Image (cartoon, rainbow over all chains, first blue to last red; front, top):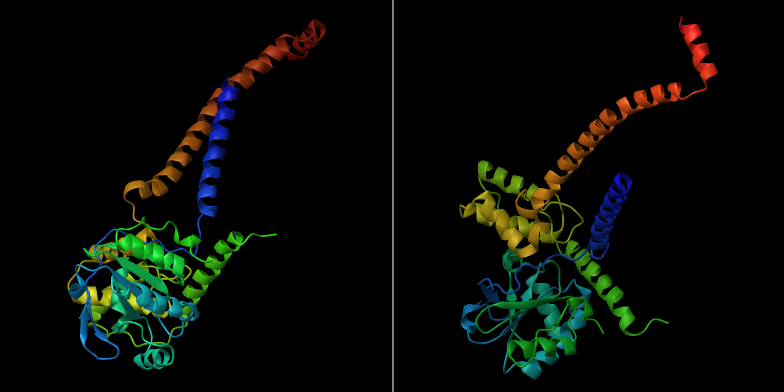
Length: 186
Length: 163
């Protein structure tokens, strides 16, 4: 009887260790947790890259907002630029698109946008305090903010048209929120 | 052959790792102006406890990444605003989860990390003591039993020797 107890105890201990290992191995070590989902979007007042005019999140209250953090030194950001241009053309009358320049110079951003088009307002984020307030952990990242100012979700990495469409539909209350970001790439 | 969907996870992993690496290569910008010495010391001490979001286990005070600089600037801004250390750490935990802290807090489920090793050690110690106590008398008893159950000739021989 005693030997059985010892064996069962040993098996339980091994299973517990296996569970811990499975949890650890099933996790992407590069993935940074995101805690702002479902929370109020931090307010900001930033300058427009082109006009220098102040732009705040508050002025768009009542409309869904798509906030894209990007930089010219980031290859995937350039990759998704045509998708954002397309999305603005497709959904710009229902959703506000804003770009936030992350850790880059205004000159670099102006040069890139002059060559590739400026589909929607681009904002300067001195010292990237707004990016940190949103929980940005690299670029590109695209945030989807509901019309009442709640962060519905963020997309990490370059966004593709099907994903953008799904998020915009969710913002407009016409579809469910897309599932895990890891399925985003084509 | 790997299907079209089979490439998605590795591709996304490469993009994410690439994005994180690129963030470390962003053009270097100057940080905000240091605060007076006593406040700046607090900024640096807090910076040592907060993990850089794009680095591998480095604090925002030690990492040269632009993301770390941005995070440290946020700490400096909050210290300047008069926020407490706990408020500042909670700000980062709210955004990046417990991952944001290089040393996990000792509250809630995390307490298990500190308590379980001690409990396991005490359990092991208790088991060892119990084992020794249980087996020592048994060993003596079995020796005596063994001696008694031997051949009568051996017993007689032993008693001759002992005499």
